[in-house]
View 1 (cartoon, rainbow over the protein chains, first blue to last red):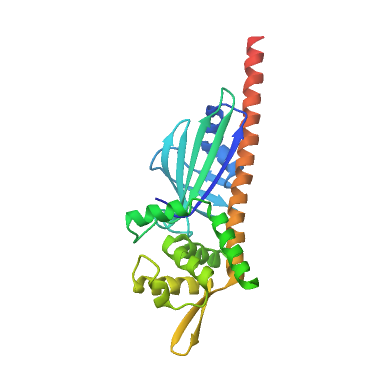
View 2 (cartoon, each protein chain N blue to C red):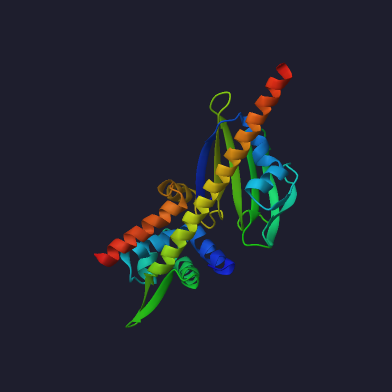
Length: 148
Length: 119
């Protein structure tokens, strides 16, 4: 189970197969994600993404058209992306009618380590908010404590 | 923030045990490692390790009081972290917005083609 997550979604006025192609085809990906995308959309495929003058390896995980697509990209830069050192990006496409699709993206960070399963679940349950909200909350508590 | 500092901050906060420690520090401030160890489901040794990482990332600082070492949160760094995380979320909103624009344009184009073929 991933520890830190960012979750966003958007409703698109297009069928799932059109959204799928936009999300997964490398020449389309280079329009919304990286500047250059060298990637074969196959589970386990290794590729490369260039952002400005920086770039790094990418590994495709799940390819289940037209509903699920995920890949791992590097963080920190330069190392082979595996669980524990990288970010997992997961797309889920849900049709909401013939010409409407909800696209959800979840980006999650380092996996939980050294943590008993029950504790993992409990902590995850307590922190279902995205991490941005989590940190905002921390900052808010801190400000209250300083002013109070 | 530099990429390097970003990486350190990221990995410091990414670990849920460390967030737990950070949470306790935010709520209680000025506490010792033993005090923290009494309130988390992991060992005193693990607490010490997490404190080292959090301190290295600049999220907490320590001071000596008598024989005790007390830890507290560095508010500015935490603010910076919150902003960095919010920026990541905003980045995804921008990407999803672009995907929406591209897919809707492709769909409109497909429909135009289909209608042309029919007529």
